Length: 137
Image 1 (cartoon, rainbow, N blue to C red):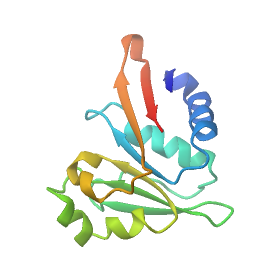
Image 2 (cartoon, rainbow, N blue to C red):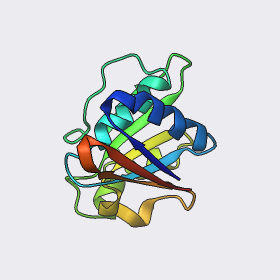
Image 3 (cartoon, rainbow, N blue to C red):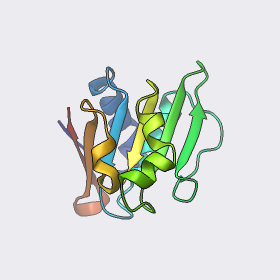
């Protein structure tokens, strides 16, 4: 499934994403630097009921958020890691198999540790500041 959106229609794209992927827990977000992976993930977290401060996990590697309903969401950024073993050492694998929702940026850095049912999402820049999100279920 493909979703094309711009900043003004981000919330509509988030709703489409959530409807399409509602039965899934682990999401791997692929895309070049600056394409909007963090922005999209934070918008999904907000739509799921996260009210606290959200930031990029580039330096912390793992950010943990709680929704108003008490659900735990992990936002993970593997950019600074070199391989799967570093991800395991950082606790990423524990998050991926915890049963909680996980959004992972730069998953190719540790491709071998993801569950088989991970949803891979590819974000690309289109003309006129639009983005295309390809969701592979």
